[in-house]
Structure formats: C-alpha cells, structure tokens
Length: 612
Image (tube, rainbow, N blue to C red; front, side, top):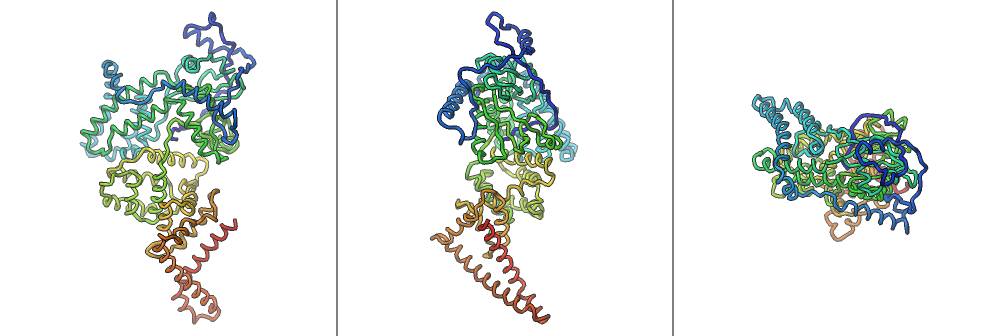
C-alpha cells in the first residue's frame, strides 16, 4: 500500500445529516436545487431493517462459517457485477477516444505545455549559466507546485515519480514525496446522486444518517460518515470524483505521447519511459475501481490475520460498486499527531492509531506484491551488505531484476563501496532507512537501473512509515525493527537461497564468525514466531547431506580451532593464580581466549533460546 493522507490535523464535526422517508415518484426531487434541499433534511426516523440482513464481507476467516461465508461471497459477486463496466487502462482505446477530439486535446495540451515549457526553460537557463546543480532543490519545489496545479493525474504522477530513484535525482524525490491529494471537494448533491445511481437504491433506504459534507477528500474521491439503516452501524462511504476517468484518460494519452518523445530524444533517461507510464497508468486505473480496492483490503486482512495489533476495516459489499466504497468506520488518530495519540480523539484518515493501540490501515487503492524470488534476493542483499561484499551486492541486482544480464556491474561496485563503507559504520539500531534509500537512489540514478514497481513501493512505503513512526518514537529505526525478522528467516528458512546466505554470513575466509551467530540468535529470539528448535536446521541438514562436503570441511577446521581455544582457555584459568610470570603467555594466547569466550556466549544464547 502506498496511499497516504496529507499531513496536518483537523477536528471534524460530529453532526450528520438525518435522512427522511424515501419520497414517492410524484414528490421525488427533479432538479439540482431540489436535490440539495433534500440533502438538508434533518427529520429523524427510526431505522427499519430490511428483510435480508446484510453483513460485512471482510472478517476474521475463523469466524466465517456456513451460510455467513456463502452470503459474503454472494454479496461480493453482486458488487463485482456492478463494477463490470469499470474502466481499464488501454492505450489503444485512449488513442481511439481522443484521436477524434482534437479541440479538447489541444486545449489540455496547451495547458500542460505552458506549465512544462516554462519549467523546461528555467532548467535550460540553469544549465547554460552553470547553476544547474545548485538550483536542483528550488526547481524540484517548483515542479511539485506545477503538478499540484495541473490536477489529479499529475499529483499521482508526481507521487509515482517520488518512488523512482532510477529516474529522479534525490532532490526531486524528496520534493515530490511532499505532494498531497489536497483538492477542492465536489458538490455533495453530486456525491449523493452517484451513490444512488451506482447502488440502485435511494439514499435514505441505505443510510439513516450521513454527514452533510465530506469528512475527507483526495484527488480521486471524498469520504462521508454515515449510519446504515438496517443495522445502525457507523460506516465510511467513499465516493469517486465525477469526471475523474475522463480527466485521467486524457492526461495519460498526452503523457504517453510525451514518453515516446523522451525515449527518442532524451539520452539522460535510460529507462523505457513509455513502459513506465503504462505501468503506472494501470495502477491508477485500478485505484478507480473501488471493488478492486475492497478485494485488496480482504487480501491484506487475510495476510495479517494473525497480527492482533493490526486492524483492517470490514467491507460492506452490498453497498459497494466501482465508484462507491462502504467500509467499517474506524476511530483513531493519524500517526503524525503526537498529542492526539495521547488523547485518542476520533479522527478519520488512511493510517491511524486506534484507542486500543492498534494500527489501522484504511486505504488499499494502490497495492503491490513482491514476488517470492525477490523476497529471498532482498534478504540475500542485506547479508551481502552486512558482509560489505559489494561485488555480490552488485550481482544481486540481476536477481532483483534491476539490471539486465548484459550490463557490466563492475563500475557500480566502487559507488556502492563509497556509500556503504560510511553508512555501515553505524550499528543496525542507529542506521536510518531514509539515509540508505537516499544513498541507493544516487547510485540508481547514475547507472542504467530499472527499478521494478514493487521495489519502488517498498522503498517509498518504508521511508514514509519510518517517518510516521518517528512522531510516536523519535528513536525508532525501521531497520532495527525488521532485523529480528531477517535473523529468524536466515536461521530457520529451508530455502536454498537463504541457507546459502546464512552460510555466507557465518563463514568468511574459512573462519567461523561466532559473533555473527550470537547476534543472529539474540535478534531472532525477538521475533514472536522464532522457534529455537528450528534454528540452524537448514544448515544442519545440509551439513549431514550428500551436498555438504565443503561445509563439513569448514566445520571440522572450526571445531579444531574451538577445541584448541577451550584447552588453552582452561590452561590460562588454571595458571592465572601463579603471578606475573604468566603474563607473556596470556598475551600470546589471548586471541584463542577471545575465540573461546565468543563460542561460549553463542552456545549460551542458543541454549537459552531452546529453554525459552
């Protein structure tokens, strides 16, 4: 998930619109003014339950059985049927649609070119006057403001570019990351009309009350707080902005044409810009389908069903379509509202802290899933980073699909070494993820990288999440928080890739690094799913298997060294009381003693983990 609400705090009014009885065909409002008048009705009436009780579709899978599960699936199918005509991104369809509308295309083209041309001229003058690098930050801020003025498509585009360190320099990444979906609201009467049209029901038959104005608004839609007629349950109703598909379609048609121009004439950008635009446009169009967002929420909730500290709201499929999304209302505060977190005031948003201490996720419009092979490659990449094996780190970019196999990675190695030799002087608990991202971004921008969409979202998500967490805990570091998970996976996962990564981490130049094992055991025990009985099982199976001869040789050599260390350590302890004449002997065998104590500590931690 990569959609986040704008920073800032606002207390929303708790007043709501109470709807009266459904008007008859003779008295139903016909005009916009009449509809607005109906939106002001405040006559209360008791909720009347319909014959069929509708239930939310996203719940704990362990609680959904028999008829409930069947009814949930049927409700989702009905929602999918309502969204059958939802727009899907197709460059060919856009070319047909707007190729025959030259006046509309020309008007929007002039609007975009006026803004882009002025910006491009400033870049040209900066380059000519030799101040291009000095004014990067200023120009990046100007580009952010231009994107805001050009509307929803360019706001989304800028947010997408903020996740692409292979395209934008660091100054632009930081400025574009500040883009927010702060657009004016559209008329409430249009929103209420959309709800009725999409769901095929009158507003008062669905809700016993609804807020008279939106409690939140973004580039694609706005949200109302309402109460369901049949159950009295409080819900959030997201309604899509009218005409948004038309505006976004035209903009992507024009932007794609610009992409062809960049691919042909702009050598500084090595990525396939048209392919990137198509990929991003598909994601934006998926955000326009609220049924897809509901399914994303269901998938997310299933993946994190075992986490009691994560809350995902229920989806009400009977009141959901491609342009209307009805979900459970969640009380909470944004994570950047430190004082409010302490007070636990009700507040809507996309990422909230609840009064029960849970983290609530509310926006599932743009989601991505990391391929399994890439997950293993990321863990291996972390191992290579810890080992300062920059040649292996560079080769990892093949497995991560950052580089094609025909690209020579040898020039990348010095750039990685220059950055990480400084960054890795910090401990894991001190290392800031944003620092790593900025450093990697500079490397990605200099060389012909093509960062996959899933990885760009990982970088952006973790950077934002770490920033939000710092409001609650100034000492929080996302790398330190995630390291126990890495340690657990390395110690217990039987995947050959991770098994080899563990061996690579523990052995270097034929020597066993006991401090690394000790650290992995200490960190791994911090993960709640860690099992000491499973620790090192993949390595032991390899050690005893037919393919473990090389590892057995290393272990035998290390066993000899440990035995020597134990014997010498015992000798030192025995003669430690004989005075100063043994000091030269102690100095001579001190390295063996250090090894002895490291071995002892590692085995002690392993034994303690087994007992716990």
